[in-house]
Figure 1 (spheres, rainbow, N blue to C red):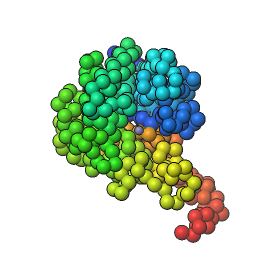
Figure 2: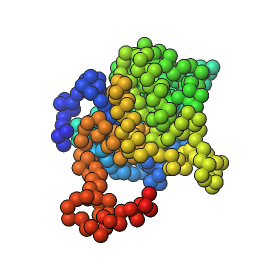
Figure 3: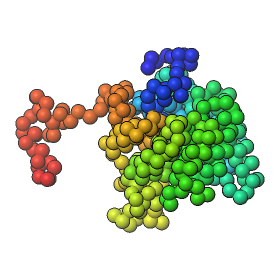
Figure 4: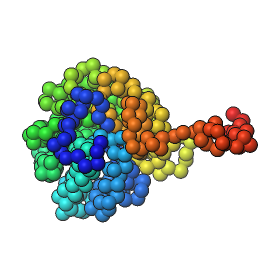
Length: 357
Ligand SMILES: [Zn+2]
């Protein structure tokens, strides 16, 4: 991509999906929590107002690694969460700033800019007042995204099917392309007990341009659902797992336990002690190849993602993003390498360094 592309030169989301894969880096909350710029628990993107330069930098880092989408960092930047931390007055500035930062990076790099809405945490299936309130929150955030001129809007991490549908309706009311992804619970269902495949079919029928899954599940426990979803819908499918080694026994990152460690408060690795379960870049590459192979075209990594995961995903799809300039070349390692000019004394040391395994 050229450094200075005008919006008019750009293909939209659906054109890009028709032509090939679209990679969308997510995981901003976990990354900034690790860096110490927002708090686990409430998980509000306060860094947008306090350190906009860092948000811009992380967007640029993910684009450098291969992301085709700059997703405005408004996840959990909605009215309910801002109220929870006593910053409701910052709601609009936070959203507008996040959108401006994302747009600036997208326009500089020839990528797409996406608005973002997400689970409100207030939705209750039998409570129409909570649903009206959620829709109002979606409408105000989508409105700011429209003002910013986003290319499309992502509605994500919904566990309630009804809430996913409400998010979709808010995006479609603004006449923007909608990517709707749900986080499927440990029991394999939505929170209402709807089968996820059925939920995806109904979201497609309701006008979603892309439907799929994000968050909660790692590659291994997301893939079986993706295969069913890909078969069941005609529209494009999205897959953005968390980069953690979930298993049939522990299908979500919320359900993981760590028998090797006895000092985690509450004995629950989620959300800040998941490190030992982190997928390496090769596992993410394998996931990307398999997902692409079954026809999933919108790909990314959610909470826990690092730039190396995104680069691995891009390279697995046959791309060479700018960060690939520094992809590993172990032939030049002073002990494990084979390049000419390396010292034989060090190369002979390789078995000993590995512990003679
Ligand atoms: Zn996530």
